[in-house]
Image (tube, rainbow, N blue to C red; front, side, top):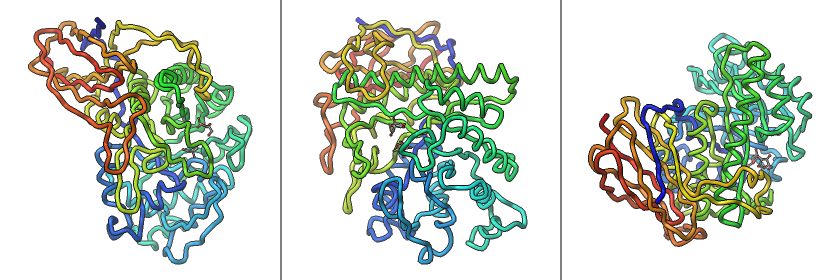
Length: 491
Ligand code: AHR
Ligand code: AHR
């Protein structure tokens, strides 16, 4: 019998809802042919696919990163404003394609407003100049009688867009990136970008470009940019054909957040920095099948991947003091929870835990005590590239606990990573009692390899009620499942 103990007073911190953020890049069929399809009968008069909008709305994303990704390092934002017919078609060198520029800053801001999300723009630090970055901030946020602000007005938007979050380049460390830099070169350049962007609008928040949270690049960039930024980014994708490697790999994020959290604390201490610096984990997901850069990254997700995704969200909750923004990469078609063709769409397996967590996880994170069987990861040769085996053994049940501020509503997210065995569990409250029945929302299916397809939802959500009496309840978490358990409490 496994045991989960929850003391509603043992608060870890507050969950920033922006960890449920998303990301859209000009890549394959994410934007064009995904969320934006001007010729589709399924689109509204602006070209936004209505079915995609509805599915995306249910993910309750508070923030949406754009326009890349690797794409941004060759993107000149001025190509994407003004009359659509006059916008240049460009050779696109990050993903070897062509860019029509029909979706640009105005379309993006419109999309954000329609979806009810906050914009988050990453600037081009590859082929882009400081002037361009400065101009973009002014175009979006400027209120004075100056060139870029006036150009926005001339293009039909009197009121500023008010873009608060700005990224200082994307993955500038990578040799795949247009304009790759060393950490030292990046720091020098990013400080100057930060200077002009902030002078243009002192109210913006800046994100420095981090790597995996555990690398030398992170160390140099955290130290070098601490006075200039509000966030340090982390990108880690994981995935493996081997179920156990796949579902345990997200613990790489545990290590990354602990490690980079320490780097940030040290830099703030050493440099006497008053302002807080948090992590923007601005690209994450399971991604290992469609690694071919020309294939459009149309990963088909399994139940095993859904468990991995839920584990990531649990990790973000447990590290809520460090990570304040996280952006699932990406939203539609490209390594994404929503998948379309010209006539239809379907929800991938990973959509369900994302939707459930965004709907049910609450504002106060609690320190859950878990006593259950453990699993040691020995062979994880295919867990590329973030090794986690030496962090084990791992609890087979991965758990996060959150509650509302008054302490009357509790949510547990429990991932049973065991592919074969259900786990009987006692959930015990300390100095509190369950108040009536609880509801268990379950995501499971016919084994780790189960996938969804058009018209075939093999992995979905089922809800059932769980009886609870006094301070404990008993529940069996099905093999290979994500369970979101929501219960009323009285104190
Ligand atoms: O999300 C796909 C790609 O992964 C992004 O363009 C890049 O930033 C990362 O390498
Ligand atoms: O695409 C290369 C690497 O893959 C990136 O650094 C990281 O985002 C991902 O894990």
